[in-house]
Length: 198
Image 1 (cartoon, helix red, strand yellow):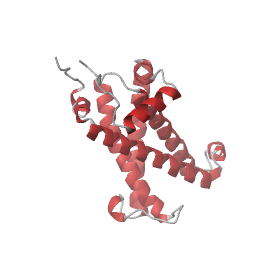
Image 2: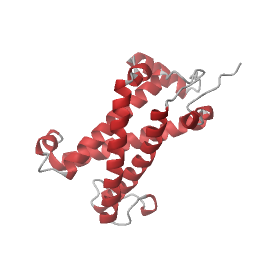
Image 3: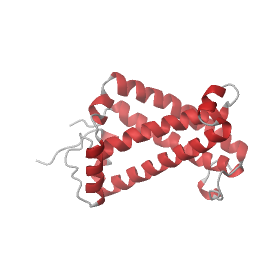
């Protein structure tokens, strides 16, 4: 049975590349002017120095923006978001997160997302949107002053951008962990299909 349409699979893997480029180059940019009392190890950053990191960051940004636009248009126009991510309730999310933490979350039907997955994917979309908007406010704080002002001007946008990045990194880390715990989900992101046991 088809679980992931071709558009979803392609945009997923392009997004993996774009987000990896943006996060690792963003860490190098962060190191040039840290917000907190730590820096990211240079071995896990991209760009080598500030100018190189900025070039990688903008390349990743355009790739992410175009890919994200395709995904959003498809998700809304095809009803993919409505079918896969809704409805959702806080009670169901708390229940499924509790079951997952106890190792008892059933995942028999890969075509249906449980409430914890729905919440994670919605949170990821929101965090990525915040990352884009705050990134634009950092990039063009004068031209996009109204946007930057909503975030506490340039410095506020930097903090918001950092925390959105941290949220994205955390959700991706949990996502990868869940794929490792339920490895039969991994091939479906290449083939789009899952064969049910008879």
